[in-house]
Length: 303
Image (tube, rainbow, N blue to C red):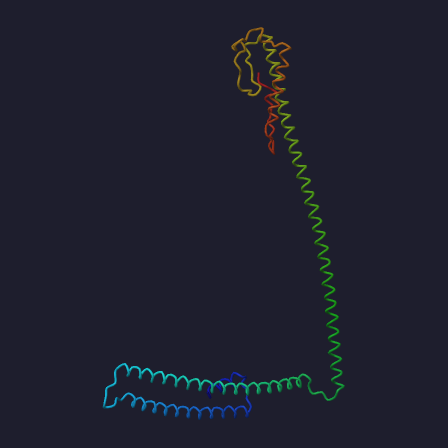
């Protein structure tokens, strides 16, 4: 208990007054004397219990005690001993709790007293050694002036911060507007690009069909001229493949002299055939990047 009180005093802050130390020593001495008394009482009780047990256990000379009776008496003695021990332990715990509570109350009161003394010392240290109230008033005015200057500086900083925030918000709005305008312009240019791509694909298809028609017409004219002049020795040339020659017209079935020269009634059918082929070409899927083939062979076929 004395060690506990010393540890509590050390944890309390390491500052004790003479009265507190005296009370702690007196409490420790009282606790020691009480412990000695309790120990003596316990030793006496144990001796009395042992004598009583010996009297109870020792059988009288006239009759014998059964084993069950001995076991029962032994259990009763053990229960009584445990009850006495628990009672003694509870009394000791209550005493220790009471003494610890008293010690803690004394320590708390001492801590409060020292805290008040510390506050008073700090106040005197902050105030300083002022000879008169005039010096105190001057110091108070100086502190108030410093506070006003700090408040003015704080107000100025807040105004600058608000101005910066306003500029940032204005710049962000302007940049957002520019981004929206650029996005609209990009969408517009993409639409124009798609339209021009489609127009280019259509023009490419039309140019291809036109060149095909022109090549077919030129081939028919040359075939007609060669048939009229009887130039069987000159082979026919395909307009689509300039390096491959057709067999003579007389080798085809029904290729007589009268059938070599087509009449004017048969020419529209050829033109309609070429137009139908051009329509079929136009119906093909258009790619995003059409390729224009060179038809120089059609314009200048080999003889």
